[in-house]
Length: 306
Image 1 (cartoon, rainbow, N blue to C red):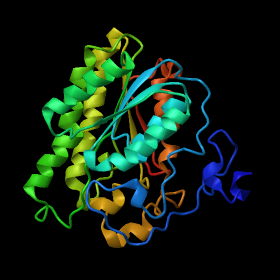
Image 2 (cartoon, rainbow, N blue to C red; image 1 turned 45 degrees about the horizontal axis):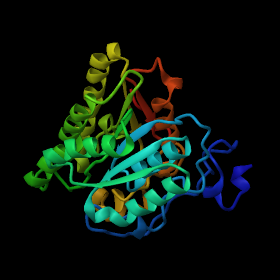
Image 3 (cartoon, rainbow, N blue to C red; image 1 turned 135 degrees about the vertical axis):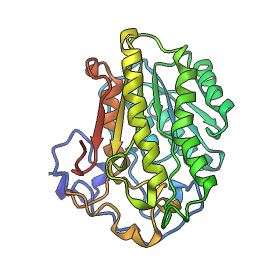
């Protein structure tokens, strides 16, 4: 049983295990990093699947672009895609280079091609540039994962700077429009687009009103685009994570004093690890989900969604 394995992060996702005890409760000490935060500096370290994700050849020959692929959920998705046989390009902010290099090493050690594309998606030209570079260096594109996001907690709306609101919408939803628009000319029938939304789209906490609003917009964007592209054989879906231990949390994504209890209010009683999201993205990217279109797949540790 995995629950008896002291090194739970090395127990792969295909092993029978109790989800309550697959990982110990994350009780991080109060910690603070400047945005955007580095996974390398987090305590404890999140599991992105380096030692725990086992592939089964579900994405052999595919070519993927993952925004925000340097750490957290995006890194776990990039690792899983590579383990499933895909070549992967990851976009990230230049300050996240250390994390990105780590993910690239895992991808190449898995026998796949890794392309590193730093760039700030709040700049419109970067959104198209990362797509063109992916196509150039991988020889095509058939999986797009729009995952990059900005999340900053505030005590109230009155104390939320206007600049932050604009940047959050630029990074979380406007960039998604722009990257996707640039990708469409390259996507052939059978291609997939997967957007990262959040449980807070349905349960918006007051400190994250701007972030939650963008995540609700992503749900609508995904469902509308899914209807437009379905006749072309391009599937669009979304994944809604619950509380996941990523660099967003200690870099002002949560109030610092709340970090030790992060995720413990879920029915599973713990925060999720990034690699626990990866199978949802693999499923939506693979041909197994050929009749799944416009779906928002919730991976929330039991937190209810509509």
